[in-house]
Image 1: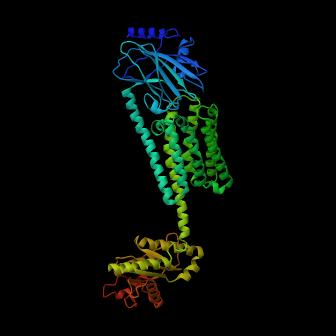
Image 2: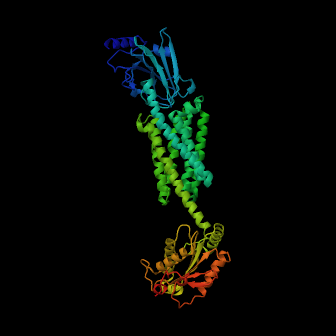
Image 3: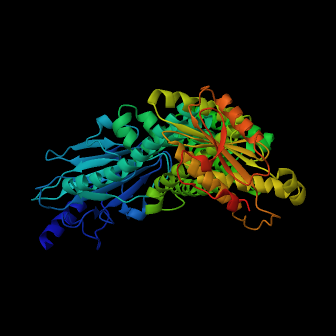
Length: 589
């Protein structure tokens, strides 16, 4: 091992302009300890002009010991690094990995056996299909020899500040790592595509522009993350390096206008404050102008270094102002929107700080934005669903005003007649029976006077709720007039089903109402008949029940009556010779 280190140091000393040898970390290409960091096993030189060739750089004497923490570039600069790979087992291929998909260009020079420098390059300025190893970020093959050290020179160019580590990985290690990364990224993009499909389907079915705006927002975020992770350059636009360099910035900016629209629509801020709606349109125009300027000035303009972070910071501020204003106005959906967008805004600022070199390479800067989007998109869908549900409920209530009784919330007589006709037709076709009941509260006037208007209205609502609890889901409870109700017992149901229901209604009417003191329990009379009736019409059945109630003797204490096939009202005691199902006299006593 000592001999190998001495050979590597001797080879480094033979490079033109080599720095004096000192104690350094050893570049040990050990496949069991990966990734292998370059650390200080290199000499570095910063070319301020970015125009020098490899021969000029090697002839320079300004090399100094380099450390990974010193890799920080500005536009137009080139960082040169020279290192030699000590002898190592060459059973597996090794790569120099630069885990930064936004890197403009990385060129690796290798000194071959004939003494000439051969080069391979990767980066945003080169189409991915021209890379030596197409990947999500630059991956350059290095030459490893088992007998002698191999000299390498690396040139790095970037139009944004760079702070990253240089690492060596074997082919097996890189393949396993990429499989894990593909699983995570596949889950992220798969979730986004599922949400996109759901939003597009909702927009088509519900005809809701909010879901359309959400779909546009998701598409822009997909373009942004595809460019930021390198997936887009590797799979979607491998032959378009200019767009690969600009896609993250353009996608992130274009995702803001639909988000402005969503927040103003979902929180109702645009309706409450029309000036705010105008402000969001102005911000959207600014976003489109910024994107157009990016496309015009190109990826290599110095103006881009200032415009992108400034636009990203300033254009996210309206989101915070809009959410805060909606929360101050106590909008019901505002907390959901704030919970959705706040992590995304925070991670956007972290990303901008990382791109400008304010903070170094860390896990949050690399993966925090995707985690925030995994939280943000479903939460925005929840807010959209809440607002859409509320809007549908309002429209449904407005549409049902003519079909619902305002005092009780039950359906009106028109709806009951329509459903009764359907039940009659169905009963005739299938050869079964249905039932129709009429419930009359006798002391309506006395209850209204003794209870007062408000208490009487509450009693009607609670009595209607009690009737709804007695019937099945397929039955219909309707309000005919004040104190008069009707129930359609849908078939197949024999006549005794209506009779038993009538008995339960009388019993339920005698039960006290909680927190409601009545001078006396409501006295009800229930008339029922079997459908289809001889006339075969719903209105005729209702009229027959009304006549039956009008012919009743008010002094008669019996409560349940049935209308036979001759349209005659008979007490339930005369039910075809069967046992009396109810002692009506005791009930109304």
